[in-house]
Amino acid sequence: MDKHPQSGGSAEASSAEPSRRSFLGVGAALAGGAGAGLVGYGLGSTRAVAPAAGDVGSPAGTATGDAAPHLGDGGPAPWAASVVPFNGPHQAGISTPPQAHATFVALTLVPGVGKDGLRRLLRLWTNDAGRLQRGIPVLGDPQPDLASPPSRLTITVGLGRGALVEAGLADRAPSWLAPLPAFSVDRLEPRWADGDVLAQVCAEDPIVLAHAVRALLLSATGIATLHWMQRGFRRPVTSTSAMRNLMGQVDGTVQPSETELDQAVWIGPEGPDWLHGGTSLVLRRIRMDLDTWDSLDPQAKEQVIGRRMTSGAPLTGTQETDVPDLAATNAGLPVIPEFAHIRHAAVTSASQKILRRPYNFDDTPAAGTSAEAGLLFVAFQRDPVGQFVPMQERLAAHDLLNFWTTPIGSAVFAILPGPAEGESLGQALLG
Amino acid sequence: MHTHTIRAVTALAACLALGLGACSASTATTATSTPAASAAKGSGQAASVTISDPWVKAVDTGMTGAFFVLKNTGSTPVHVVSASSPVSPMMQLHETVMSTSGAMAMQEKKGGFTIAAGGSHEFKPGGDHVMFMGVNAALKSGTTLTFTLAFEDGSSLPVTAEVRTFTGAKETYVPGATTGAHSMPGMTDAPGMPGMTTGSHG
Image 1 (cartoon, rainbow over the protein chains, first blue to last red):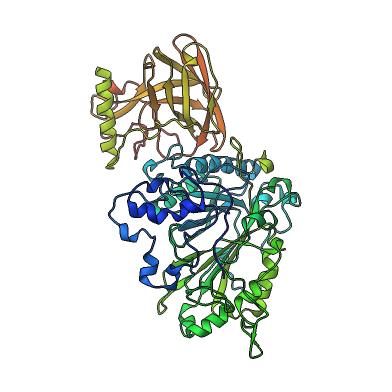
Image 2: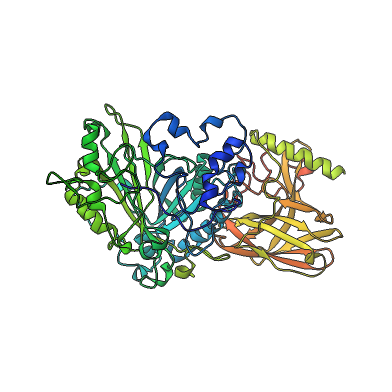
């Protein structure tokens, strides 16, 4: 599983210097107790420091550069005033370095609302999202005080096949906009499947996030109803520690580089015109059986993944960012086992890569168990059937990790291009 | 001055009636233009007026209200005297006042609103607003509609507003509320008050 996205989309405003250097300065700014609100977030990373000392699990290490030692300083969190721009060729929340909290909301269009209803919903959401991402209450906001600070809020909107069917536009749907083919490992539950309209809402501040989600749901009144809601979390953007899933693995390592996003993520002329600049989102709700996973010793866990648990480094390397050497052998046996997860997730060409933006979930355990936890595996790619499906087929067939993980939800959405100033989401499709 | 005092008391009463601690000052005073809404430039008084954040509560039929922030960018006062729209045969400028019985009520603001040079005025649920009556076709959320504000000097300003679903702003028109005609205790008639049962809309 893999690590941090390269981002590369939108520079965030209210930040003086959107550079990696200023990102690295987060800790220093906090330590100084001044100017924290002006710190920029770099384009390049979701973490301040790459595999650093902070990842080895030593308490001293993890504290370095983090906000924790400075509680009570009274200064604003460095991300609080940070605004992710809403308008642009691509929607925010895709190549944006992942925020700490996410809520995914899938709606079902009210039968009969048709193209007009879908257009109305997307116009309302365009207005709402443009305001909320700037920390401004929506029109008629019942809780206007919850809209700020902006907290790197992003609202990313997509359409499922059902939306195009309801709008009478099924002929304009790309062929991949449909449920994924069934995989042998799937145990899908309808309550986590599909959906007509998706909003991925992410923010560093969970109060701001909850408010934004509700504002979107209120705007949908009479047009669409809630189908499912899935909440996830990861580390704060200011954390110097790696994203980890709840099995303990460093997660989200392998990503397309910023220069590969056009090949891997953004839909170009090969796709429908209304999706130029858009992408696709695959959301797989993957349940983890943590109680049986715990019965493995650490060495066995590393063999299952092909990476060191503590550092995230491939078994053939020393650092998380090292490229795995799948051909390496030791006494005639592959160093990275044949059944290892990373062997089957690996791709070489940029056009086969996917942009991973996963979030953990941790719900109420059933009686007699210790966890109802897992991963919201979120992947963006130009073509799920061409990129995600081959990878998942390999994983379903060979990946030993399947023994402890179960996909229980699956959905595919066409993520609309970003609206230009004054345009609505979906305008190229709906007028 | 007298009017001003009444409004302040009214606003306080409205806050208390809601039973909520936070009844903060206007939240929309930082003018932010809404992509879906705009106001064209007029002449005369209208020329010095800018409208921000205009929206109208969605209704199937009957009564509704328009809400926005009006800013007078000019050096002399402007005086809004009426409003009109193709979707309503009868529109009024409304204020929310305390009736002689102590209840909150909305009523027509005779003579309209005067906004001082450089000043701004917020039209909002539970406060002053532009009232639509007799709406005979559904105003659906996510659409836009245009209404026109008319000024004392004959100038006018079209305003394009987004229609939005809203559970407050249950506008009930109570003619003569301040003369005690309306006897319901509590806050039953102020726009935006919960539990308002007289009249329909909404």
